[in-house]
Image (cartoon, rainbow, N blue to C red; front, side, top):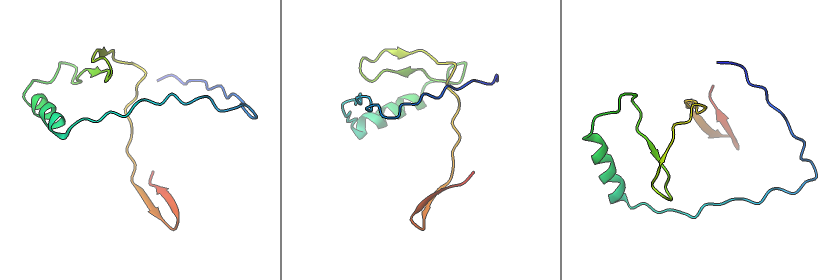
Length: 86
């Protein structure tokens, strides 16, 4: 993996950009369970990954090569602080 350069932009004194909030989406438990059931009965794709879909229009979202696998960390709240295990 090649090293990427990061550019810091000083935004001191500028107003925060307007938030682009999405409307809340409620997916009934029955629908989630039905989709889990469906996925358990079909073979995994050759690359091991199922396609992702846009929640608004249902269209497939192309695979992004820049997406990296996330690591998980143990998090503990104690002494008024949040502690993350590395």
